[in-house]
Image 1 (cartoon, rainbow, N blue to C red):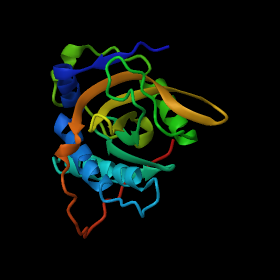
Image 2 (image 1 turned 90 degrees about the horizontal axis):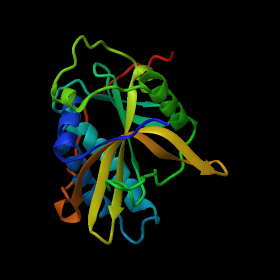
Image 3 (image 1 turned 90 degrees about the vertical axis):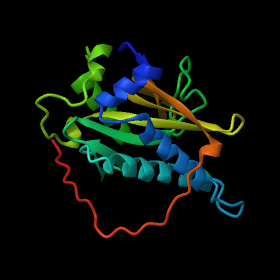
Length: 226
């Protein structure tokens, strides 16, 4: 089993910086998702609020990172919605987690079962980056040296995991790299992580209204299979 690295506070900030990200990218996405979840009424299907929240997490996170012009883009492949940075060799998928999400001592899992596409993601993570010897001191670097464009198949994939805690009136979240799945009767969930970047919780009061937008052009990404 891979040793788990956990980052929190200033170490989380430094780690995110090395990935071309910031805490604000995630809090912005969650704040927008909180607002969007409230647009679901009692007349909507029972799963509507969390479905709306997930959709807005994905959209708002993409909006945040792409607007910074740091090489981020997005694509859909094998049923998964990716936000990718080919130059940095990174991709991110978002999904809801269990109550341990964002808790340092917790054992987070994805809320819902995942399929073969997610298993492939984990296999690529282990095959490409199973032995990660980076030290915390290296996370101060803003730009990787000699970076080259690579396809989604050659990236390490992290999961933007979040949990709506109704009792605490907050959303806890983390950005973590999956390393294993477990379950029974085919209901496998991501249950192990080689890295966990603990992010600040976002109070429900921080909700940001989702603006109505018109998109005049579409970003096309070619995903090369290997």
